[in-house]
Image (cartoon, rainbow, N blue to C red; front, side, top):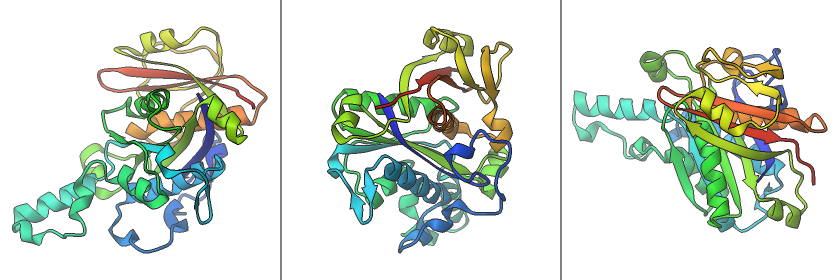
Length: 300
């Protein structure tokens, strides 16, 4: 399975190639400033960030041009990973009902209380009519989303999957869970056969994936050979992986929760694209489980 496009919309990061660099752009620049059109007023920040990152990933993969998709919409699916995506909308709605009654709620805001609102708006905006999934299952959610995208392609539900990991920084999230990173990362996944058919350029090949009860078991079940780059999990256990380079995206960007696994894969794909090959181990860890995935260099 190949990664053929990546995109980011992260405050303080200029693009996918800058994810692993210690120097980032001015953090005051809002990545959603590039969005234009009607309907943005009632979209939450997570959705806006996802729209930006997803647009760029689809464009780099050659699937999205002005004015729209280059392939049938039913051949493209979406999976979004986000644990706090619409938390502000839900809390604001609950507070309004508690203080008054249901008549105090906004009919424009109520649809935004559904947990799948981000994946739905991405699909509607870009005409992606394939399978549509949302994952919000803790720290492993990002890599789980990448894994489910591969399953959907292997099951022939779709030919391409847009995977997005997004977490917003806002007062509600800060009050409930503390500071988080503010942004989204996206990648396009497709089979090698599909990429060959349309002459796509592969950035990386997605290898083995494992979800286990401990970090050591997850890593051990995906690694056969040494890796060139290791992206550390958000909660770092005592054991570590020997590698030529070790990067901590949480230290650079802040806690990314459900977006971390996707951010790690996008960073790894960009790292591989800048080199002739190599192997990247992306790892993420939740409270009760851990997940690990391997990416290798790929060229068509």
